[in-house]
Image (cartoon, rainbow, N blue to C red):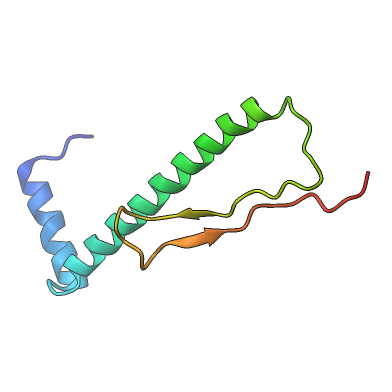
Length: 94
């Protein structure tokens, strides 16, 4: 019951083409690929931030230090979707 044969795959493709139209499918695939690249870069940035936090958490932060602003890009060379990332700051006085 869980296997898809060639007939079922062709039927699914025909239904998708009829629903969305042949002209919109390349745009949808392009936007899906762009979203996947953004998700991958965000996950990579979060993973590197987690490793960075564990290595630098032993030293106390200095009051005059300001971290540099990071920019996350969706794909190498794609500057249209790059955006600066605002880092959270600790504004409480201790």
